[in-house]
Length: 279
Image (cartoon, rainbow, N blue to C red):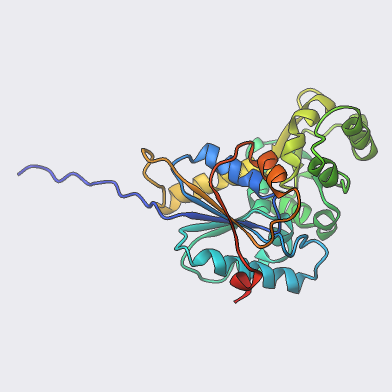
């Protein structure tokens, strides 16, 4: 009898990603580069940005609403492309049973640090993320031998959103927060904000040679790739994936910022009412 050949099955359902604003588009960009066959649906809750100045209870409520919106599209996996959500909401949401796997940028970043094999770590993030201690706690829980410094860099986001990612202004901002890293260099720097990958080239020039720079966007894409393979959820590699972007408020300068984060203008941007998310 002829042997039966098992046909490999692919899952072409979309992946959902969400953030309070547009910073998570750097994660979309990394995912589309790493997984070009996957369809992506992104929700930017721009009407309620930022989440960082909200209570943990409110952040969790918003995250659940964002997930419920994405679930309408029959997603096969979801990533919280938001450090605030990953720090404050996912600890309560992750243990719950759902029809699709869920991850966040903090878990992805921690896994990237562990995979590097380096012990002396500096985490850069917004005030809210650093104050939460989420990265430091997760890193030390995973490996108590790590030496972790956490540095809040509140001017990074507004400078990036102004389109300034190199030059003397950037150097001055780096000096303000990161001069300590020149005196006592870490082995690895983890960029704990989805805006910060746009500073990666400038940081590579600023930090001592040999310093490994890991960003949460690339780490999230690697994490998602492993997750899809583990769960048998990969799309057909011969297809070309698509992207759709939903925003709850098209703020002034939206197109400029979106192009900057994506480094390309692909996919349809759809304006939705906040009621579409919260109901």
